[in-house]
Image (cartoon, rainbow over all chains, first blue to last red; front, side, top):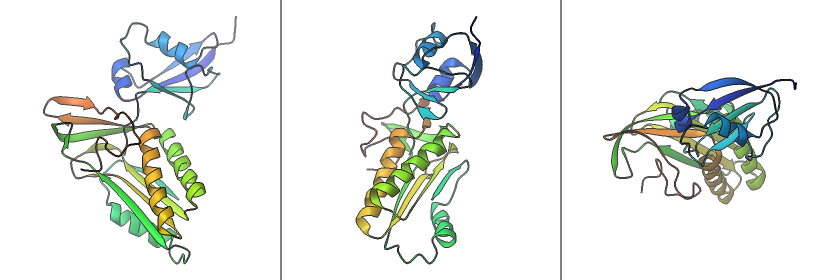
Length: 81
Length: 156
């Protein structure tokens, strides 16, 4: 069995409303891309396709592979300013 | 450089005076100062807007704002830059964001302030939720977040 990886997940704005929580801690047993994890987390939900993803405070592509201890955030397009 | 996220109403002009007085005093290289201020309107997309919640991603927001200002410092050789952005619960007329650039000549100050503002709108993790007569709604970005016609600032 692989060593479990600890991943901290955060949600913001409309994605937070959809998921019903601000954050969660996960232990995953295989290396996933950020988008594979997103699909697992939202399997039963009608989710927006334009989700943005950041790992450790930096935007990443959908195929970015998660590592132990990463913080991954999912959120809609930004609207500041 | 000054990057600050504030969670209550602030006076953007006083913030500028304070920063200039404390950090840029007596800098004889500065020949141009350029300032953009975005404030909250009471309308958007044909609805009256009575209030707004501004959410952000603490940590990532500051990192991106610093990167954006550092990019402008390199690209336009500005002497310094400032971004103060509001979060929390806002009312119409509240300042949302102030961006300022200081440089030797006006072109670089104008261009840097514009670039910083457009990059902020495209990249910095902030989200607006409006309170309207039809209820609450998350503001959607326009087709291009780098265009000037946008959702909350820059009244036509």
